Image (cartoon, rainbow, N blue to C red; front, side):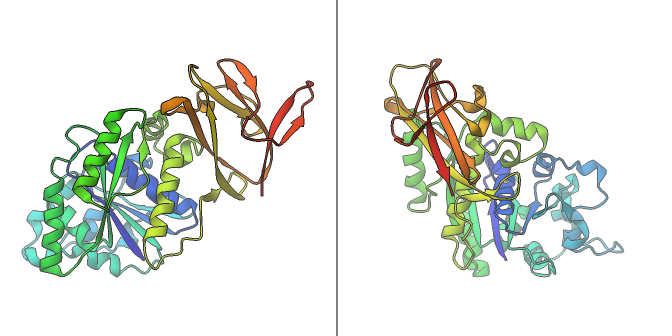
Length: 359
């Protein structure tokens, strides 16, 4: 069982979104995963379509020490979300729980003890911390083996990070516990020099402890939040979904002692393994480029748009199941084959289509 906590006292950095989608990505890779919502605002619970005002018990009931009240274990408050994904929901009462403890020194290990008493065989536990550095966050950092710090690319993104790192040092000294800390750049737009500059600022603060993966800005993430589902479920071919799948694979590769054999693969609609495929085209001076083919019924839409990088490079990643696919690029309304792929076949209209074989 490996425990991952996501923490940053700065709101709006993509912490909860990342917790939800890392947990969902792990589950889609076949890893039995438990997401714990430790934020009294319960955004992770809402993000998975769970209304805590409809629940009789939550993580609060597991951590509380009120005399005369029934003792709950984590197994008692689990809400199933998907085949491999479960949730421990939050509650607003968490915001007052610190006042209930008489022994403050022992209380900082409450979550650690509860997780290690689990009888269910989870491979991963993902904890969404509150946007503060108080009692609940201390509990999460004490329990975690890996800590991910989402850092949005803004002028104030690194404010407060030093306090989080100081808390990590306190845990190391007082509890002899040293989780591995990774910074995760979020809301990235590499078309801008500002994003590139901010990533260098993050590297200056975290050194080598910056993940290679980053999360780009995408409307699909906001839409998935409104629907109460992970972006990896809402639109598996969106930039956000692809970014979180690649991030999760990187984490599997970096965490020692875990099975990382999923690769850039996840379950397709029919249960077969899908693979992430990169498409790119160099074209300057054009307004938009689409990728259409058998995989999207040759439909030009917002979902088929490629992402424009600097220097006229257009890119897109898609999760495709094994099979034979014909495709083309649509450049400002003009259809053309992929100049980097010399495998072509005739189509019924007398033209040629590019062909991709995925085994």
